[in-house]
Length: 229
Image (cartoon, rainbow, N blue to C red):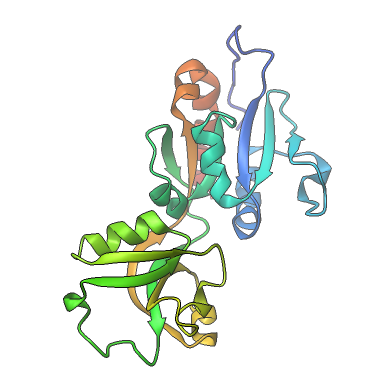
């Protein structure tokens, strides 16, 4: 599956940069990278390594390891030419600078609304005019509730959302849910699924125009790897 990745003369000396997410998604992504034929430097998998940029077995490709939410930022601003991030990040980080050609089918979870078991279903949600929401997805939350005619008063948290309802910060939370065990452990229950989430291969649109052969080559490699799985 060695597809040619020709470099244009102008960009021949500059490696493509691929942004990859730390954590759970990276664990699921490793077999995909192996099928694509990408082998990062040996210390890439060392979570204690202070390095953030790593060479690969391809002279024209480096990888950077960043937080999942930062992948979209790096790609949108052109600091990385290609990357992998969850659909939740793309939904939150709306931009026309990112093209997402492939669903990799990994990192499956969902964005859901959840509230305390004690209050769930006690009143008619269709009659709410405003609601306090704790989330790290303010744009998704506002759009979701606005579509129902509800004003979302967002409390922006980057973690421990599950504590917010019991401590009186919010009525509900909007967060990623995989198994629901964390919600259950904190006395919460899903009341609505906003969207299913998987990880996507994403590309900077400008890079796609200026380095089309290389970018198209990597997209083809990923597509072939998915087909062969």
